Length: 248
Image 1 (spheres, rainbow, N blue to C red):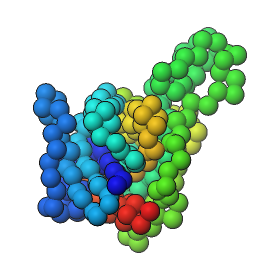
Image 2 (cartoon, helix red, strand yellow; image 1 turned 30 degrees about the vertical axis):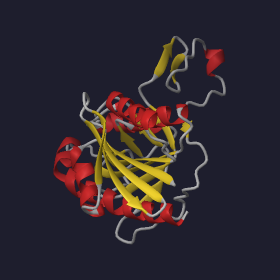
Image 3 (cartoon, helix red, strand yellow; image 1 turned 180 degrees about the vertical axis):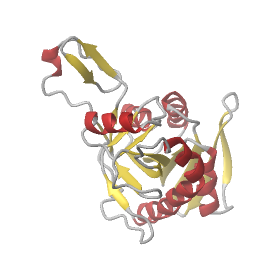
Image 4 (cartoon, one colour; image 1 turned 30 degrees about the horizontal axis):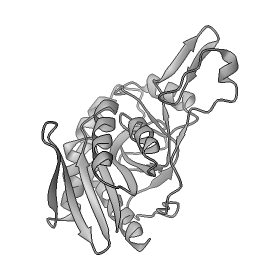
């Protein structure tokens, strides 16, 4: 028996996935106090769980830890939407990655600003030499290198994450440069990656572009306008991820 967990930050993301998967689920209450529930789908020897975490790293990390304390999860997928950090990405494109870098967890010293892995600390320039702040998933049987959906363009790239809604093109460009050429930014991936590693569970981040890299102030407008459609694209790709998982 194997267990696959999808975590969505927003109701629109979760609803799109549930609509794609259909009605054959059971509801499991993880925490009444936090109103945390999982939708459980059973496929022969495989279980698929869908959970709503709420927006941001604090919500995502807390909810994931509670689930992992209760259930033996074999694979985590953070599914939803994010912001494009490169002009080549369009609304509805997807970025898939097993690598995350937190753009707002850093040590600001006289020698410069150094990004770090959550929970670690750089105190001097010497400690920063050859330091890599990237969170990389444990090896997984779920390989998405050949993930394909004819109607959706899929990129494979490191993802930047932090507790900031990035609604400014200049800030997006800074994060792209700062985070080793990351193509997409979100608000939950670094917490998911950090908690997953502490629980020795593989993770994948799969996020659809809901807002492009604009120079005209339309980033926030994009997010509001295209959240639903981007969420539907994410749900379509999730079906392919499940199919690959069931084959494994």
